[in-house]
Structures are given as C-alpha cells and as structure tokens.
Amino acid sequence: MSEQSLRVTPLHALHRELGAKMVPFAGYEMPVQYPLGVMKEHLHTREQAGLFDVSHMGQILLGGAEAASALENLVPVDIVDLPVGLQRYALFTNEAGGILDDLMVARLADDQLLLVVNAACKEQDLAHLRQHLSGRCQIEELFESRALLALQGPAAVTVLARLAPEVAGMTFMQFARRNILGSDCYVSRSGYTGEDGFEISVPAAEAEAFARRLLAEPEVEAIGLGARDSLRLEAGLCLYGHDMNAATSPVEASLLWAISKARRSDGPRAGGFPGAATIFAQQQDGVARKRVGLLPQERVPVREGAQIVDEQDRPIGEVSSGGFGPTLGAPVAMGYLDSDHSALATTVWAMVRGKKVPMKVTKMPFVTPRYFRG
Image 1 (cartoon, rainbow, N blue to C red):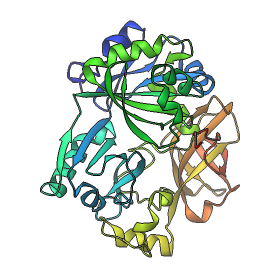
Image 2 (tube, one colour):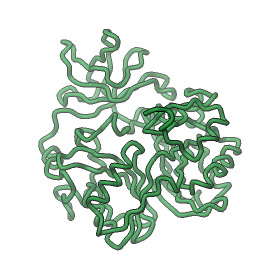
Image 3 (cartoon, rainbow, N blue to C red):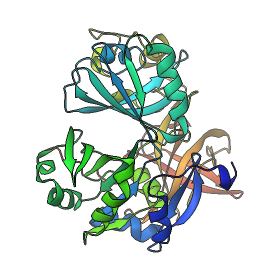
C-alpha cells in the first residue's frame, strides 16, 4: 500500500508533533517509536504509565435482545452468561477450526455488546458478522467515529483516577461507560502489555484533546508499536497473523483456556460454533504441533520465520514471534513445534543466518503479569 493511501488515526497530527517515527501497519500510518526509543518506552511502561494509540483497531456494536445468543454462533465463548460490565477474550473460528481473528467482547447492557477486533481483520470481521448475524441483531461499525487509547503500566490507575476517580474500583476485565473530561467513554481495565491498565474508547473528534490531557500527567509517556510488540511478547500474548491465523486452531495455538467451559463438548451449550467438531476432536486426540514459549540460550535475537530444528538438523517447527525482552534482559520467542518436541525444558535449535542457536522450551508468560484482580 502506498504512503498516500495509508489511513491515519485521529491522533496522527499529535504523533508527528511528538516526533514519532511513522511506519505502515495494518493499512495505517502508525508510530513505531518516539524520540525516547523502543527500549526506554518499554521499560517506562513497566515502571510508570505508557499511552498507546490503538485507534486502528475496529470497534463494532451489536444490539438487540438476541445479540449475545447470535454472537455465540460464531465464537467458542460463553457470551449469553457474560454479565453486564464485564468483557471476555474471544475467537472467530472457521469451519475447519481455524482462527479468523481474536477479539474482545464487552457486555454494555443486556441487549448491547461492544467488540474490539484487530485492525487488519476489521473489514472481514464486519462482513462475517453481517453475513451470519443480520436479521438477528443490529450491527454498527464505529471504525471512524471512535478512537481507542490504551493507558498501561503500574501508574495507569493513579493517572486515570485523577480524571475519573470511579475507575480505581474496577478490576481486570471489568468494563464501564464513563464520562471523562466531558467525553462519552467506554473504559475497560485490560490491555495487551501484561501490565495493569485501561483501554479507553473515545469519540474520534475528542481523542486528541483527551490524549494531550493524559500526556500532561508526569507519569505518562507516549509509546509506539515497537514497545507494544516487545511488551506483549514478554507477556506471551498472541499477535494475529503471526502467532495464529485461519490455518491454526485454538488447540494448536495453546488457547484452550479461551474456549469457555459452557461451550466445550461436555458443557451445557456445547458446540454450535464453526469448526466445533474439529476442535473437540483435537482436544480429545491431541495435535501434531503447538505454540510454545522459547528462550534462546545465546544473546541472539531469533526472529519470526526462523526455522527450528532438532539435534539432527531435522525441521521441527518455526518461530512465530521473537525479539529482545527488555524487562527480561534477554531474547525471547514463541513458535510452533512438533508436539513430540514441545515438552518444557526441551532443547531445540533456531537457524539464524545459517547458525544453530540453542533454545529451551519454556512456560509463558516470560514476565509475570500484573493485572489488577482486586
């Protein structure tokens, strides 16, 4: 996509003003880093509070008495019993059990859900919803009308509570509609960094003033996509299109926890979502490959796409995400391995520029999350 055809978020002018290095990402021109640099931005988020522009993500409202039961037809997640004021991680699956996208689903009211979907998938997700749910619920896309900001880090609650004291009482994955600085906001206590924090949906026209107000707080720095990626990697969180895709099932992606008990083969509302039979069979019989955490044993970053081999140089997998973990002070990676090589502490090797770099299969997350659970 040419630079001229890249879309921009409502904070584009602010990013330029702050000296951001802008790059193409998911069809948008987005800040990859600011003058502070990726390493310092990463560490600042872990120590204080970082403000991320994630307005490229897609926000979609579902409305109507049947909205929750209709959405359950497309995801292996309990939406019907999702209480008002909570959100849940969900997956759109296809008929082969592959993952079309991952998303967050929040219950605004008995008859209203807010979905946040990935930027690169939002048009196809909207079409998917309209194809399958039209007639059962109202579907309203908010792609241009609302921005999305993420305030992440241990000081995030202190900062946001100065502007809206009631957010201090929220716990991880709680969701609320709040008036903050005169803006009609949707606020969730969640994020993509492994830290405590909030994601705040703001009317697009008010987003720049809102962001400037947050950046005026002494604890807050603007953070780009570079640090967002290293933070989520340390937290062991998947990036759609890299760590999972339409050819990857939730079982292969080690996302079995995201399939709600009520929707599993022995649950009260078992199945009924695309690919259920395949996914249940994989749960029962196992899979040939699975996503695992990997710790390179040398100070060599192992990047996405690197082939993984065994002691005899036989290919046994591929790295799906990798880089340097600033909090850990060491390289980290995740990838897909043949299941018979996926046991914890197994040594495997990544091929990096023709050299074998030893790696150990390890638990994720690499850095302990600090979500606020009350």
